[in-house]
Length: 380
Image (tube, rainbow, N blue to C red; front, side):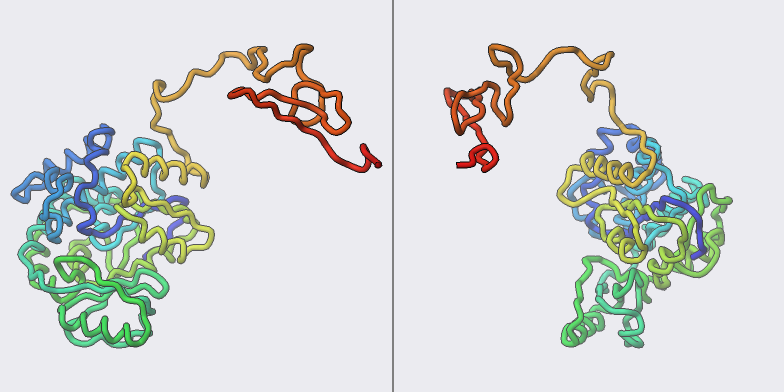
């Protein structure tokens, strides 16, 4: 990555089956989201409508090729929706397939070229073997040593956060070994061993497609998660195979303290908090939270951190305010002689050696008596 000066970073997550069903509420509620999504859907043909893939509850999104296209459409639409509310990035970066959405939002790839690349990758992914596995392990890169044949280092996400990918039996053996060593491991639910030798059969054909892309000067700086020039066809071929060095990309940013995660969960947000001191990291969507509510929480977090937000509220959503400062009406109860001038919570004075005031309940016939016991008032 290259050091970038800025304040707010858009971080585009990698693909995952957890995207299934997401975006349907936003598509119905927000024209900016719907316009961006429909523009992507009109340019990608995988034999089934993109809206049906992403918004539905079917099993197709479990396959990497379909998930890749659905991920791109959702992320571009979320970014455009945020921009319609005045939330714009000073820099963008992406994790794995999220780099394609980042490259489009940055202006490096036009929507036509980005969709061409996404469609080609999706079709190629659908033709690859789907018998591999991926595994997350809590370890540093230097801790695990050389990986055995059949396994590849897929991602270095953060301090003590790695992902390995490859042949199922090799990954299973690594999981068992690392568990015995006391390391925390977690299986990643995928249909394809991404960023491993399993994707190599697709690279030659992908190179032909990438050679036909037109690259533009970025309107927004983009930080890469690996070596190579973002404006070269070779980058988009190698990017599919090589290790995702997300931690390096985040740590290369100088001046960025605000991270907006464009995706369904908050995993990368949590990592950004570990990598950057005094960072603010907010996800756009959250599991189990209605999409509109999740986005409003995102805006609230950004606003509280000092970002400029144009709140998506219509006049009908709020209450009318008075056009002058005060309407001289009192809203506290009065005693017969006016506002009670007694100490405590009461509204009427009480002629009693221990009690100072009384107030009648507004819900029943009860009476609350208050007073103060102190040696200054009652020396006896």
